[in-house]
Image (tube, helix red, strand yellow):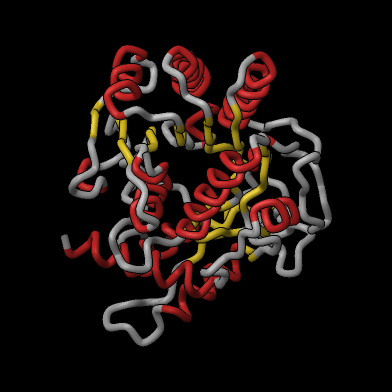
Length: 339
């Protein structure tokens, strides 16, 4: 059988990043099947013709049935809770959804012959108090998450490593830095109205949907005093998952990889570039910025060392430009506003 025609099970495939992975897989000629509980995802995000099952990753019966019915041997796991401040307020919810849910998903995968597992992790697993001075973080940097969200992701990484050591399961852990943008063809984007992503919120503010943007701290040891982050376009991130899938299948080697561009932009640069991208558009005003105190656990710089993903996978970004990320995100916000 053509391996591209063996469906890949995508958890959270109706969400922001999972939905872009579905598009990338389909664009490459691969078949997919989606499980999503629609707590944050949208059913409309799943393309026509893609088998869809509404349910949770903790439903082992559902997961097992889908794997058997479609003959899946690979899983991309995007489902989970992702809002850092919410994880601080509701830590048990995050441990239940992200750790217990992932454990039950992995049990169903092992019981039903899944061979390869691709996990959506985060740069939040790194030491939140580590001051790098702007130096990029490599995959072997100290791990000391500053939030329940980061800890829940690191716990799942540990589970994967332990399971792989005891079984034939192989995996890729992809640690995302700051994901931004939307599908350049306008098929999908970030849909949550309450999203905390800076670029999305900047686009919402430019459209008048938010009264202002809070700038949390302007006295960091960075060129303009505001935090610097490594932003990666969501479509490049989706292609990184495909490259990781091909690598693990071909080499039988598990991977842990940073996903970023290896350089960063400050909060001020993001807001300035947003103003430039939307300049002269009818009805658009410059973003109002409101100074606010630093947030606990916010490092001055968070930039990925991307040597591993580039050398191991041969991955090269297509949308490595702050203006491109903002332009695609803004176009998506306009589409949402018109719908």
